[in-house]
Structures are given as C-alpha cells and as structure tokens.
Image (cartoon, rainbow, N blue to C red; front, side, top):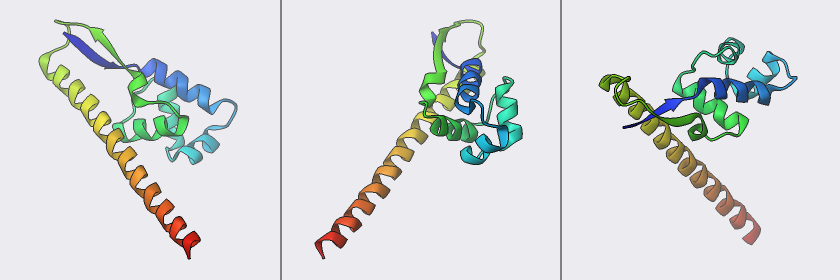
Length: 119
C-alpha cells in the first residue's frame, strides 16, 4: 500500500528559502503566521493544517508538493494511515474550495468593473 507522508524537512527548507534574508518579523507579518510558529517550522516542527496552507500560499508552493508517497505497508498502523488520508483529503478539498472562492470573487469583481465601463 502506498502512503502519503508530509515532508517537513522539505517544507522547512522552502520556508527558510522564501524568507531569505528577511527577518522573522517581516516574514511573519507578510504571511499572517506568528514569528514563533515560523521559527518552530524552520527547526522541523510540523504546523497545523491552517498554518501549512497559509504558508504554502504565501511562499507560492502547492501543498501537494510536500505530500510525498512512500511504501510502508506494515510499519504505519491503520489508524495513522486513516489520519494521513484524512489530512491529505482535507488539504485537497480546502485547495479546491479556496480556488473556487477566489474564482467566484474575481468573477464578481470583473463583472462589476465591466458594468462600470458599460455605463
């Protein structure tokens, strides 16, 4: 069985790279995530799903790029496999609804602008 696994090392490296030379406060302020949380992530601690999605959006990376598949048929208990699948499904659903929401907002904004032009 193939398992989905969160690659915290790669995620931490991506956050560090995106932050570059900027200080924690500057990066945290722009991302909407606290400095303490950014620091924890950069040292390899896993974020909650909301923070993960926020940072993926801010650094311009797809959440799926940090969810790799590994084959560990007997080493991960069934309960944990279920949790991993639930997390993966939740992320995919959230991405879909976020994209749909943005598309809806942008479409509405474009229609309003077109109506203003047509007046």
